[in-house]
Length: 560
Image 1 (cartoon, one colour):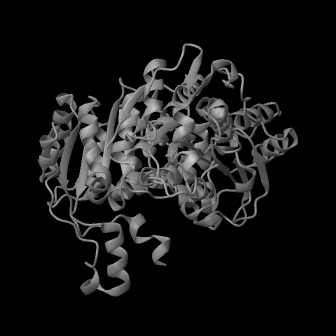
Image 2 (cartoon, helix red, strand yellow; image 1 turned 180 degrees about the vertical axis):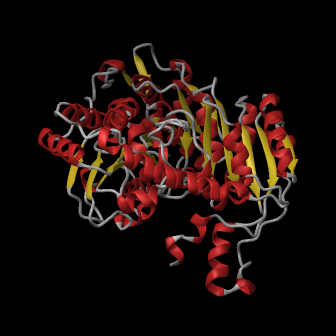
Image 3 (cartoon, helix red, strand yellow; image 1 turned 30 degrees about the vertical axis):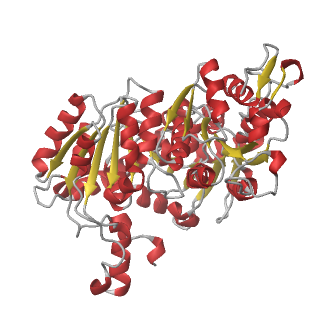
């Protein structure tokens, strides 16, 4: 290949210019002959290239990067199996409302329908799980369509886009003057919508007259960076707050309006329930877990989500932060905003919360061996700091952590989201540590989850991205095992769900990281401390009791 003339630019370099205009400073990728000109463009534009060992990891990392930074992530993979390997990561971002762009290679347009290497109908496959999927038809249009894909990522609730770029389109060079290259900040508008003003006033009326309100702050509170508005809302109006998904950490543990263990009680007893940025999906019992007599308000970025699966009394479409701020202002403008009369309601919920915590505390302090998973997640909760980004990647063990681990800052909780994808952990840790190098990153894995994408631990070592990995090792896919035993009997409870007794600590050391094995619960905290001090990617292999299941596992709706 010859270098393009000074007034010429290649398709790969146009991709890189479009990524730069969007503020992207890294791509996650696995190399392939169809896409290498993008790498060359990234070098010229100062965009880092992190090459992984599996394309699913690249897509998950782009998803994780978007969640941490608030900017869209980008993964670049080759055609055919490279793109199909990334499908799971794109699907996860789709269900989690995470903005990212996957760029896939494709055979040359000149070989269309001729059976070129790795040729597949990528756009057809990606269309159902993206907000936008297209083929770039010409080199002149490369940057233009990349920018178009980013714009579509923010149409309503955020989500992923996909582009395939044929090899001859990507490798060709065109005069710079003929290429459409959108300029940073000039090709898409603000998507922040403050909601219908009349609906805001109705919400204020409901709040003022409510004696027992509660609010669930979901992932969109973090997506919209509405944390400060949410905090002001609950404090000004004296509303107890529950948090899920990326909304966890909006209020720090110990805040008088922070509640976690009394949610079911609150949903049964409240007269006003405000659901912010959370669909009525399986996690919410499809809306059936909310009191039938309460006024229910749903706030969401996506019109299609509001009122889906359950009738509501008020629906407001728009930016969570702006709507909460406007509602607080409208209610505070009344003679009495209702805050004072909620003191007894707050105390009632706190009593329920305290009772639930004290009931479980002996399990969290258990000295049993094999280790009670509650003890493991308790030690993790005690260990993390305000600067620890916590990631959960697993089934049963991560279900335990959802009850106990409480991030201490906004944006410091990451989980797969509603697709329930296993294998996100290393990729999310990679993205989080790259984007926030001064933060500590801790990931709790199930041994089954780590096994799916664990080879990219080597990528963490290679790029010097230290994190603390903790594997709750029960040599089982225990969330599924519980359902099989419950449904078919104990004698068939070990079919297709039993793993080997793998020493993941030795695996970590083999790849150049830090590894340690723990069998005694008293050794968990010292091992965590040593992993922190090692300054390396680390795996603490904790052997947990395989015959203990999380309450959330035993209540799984799929088994009902």
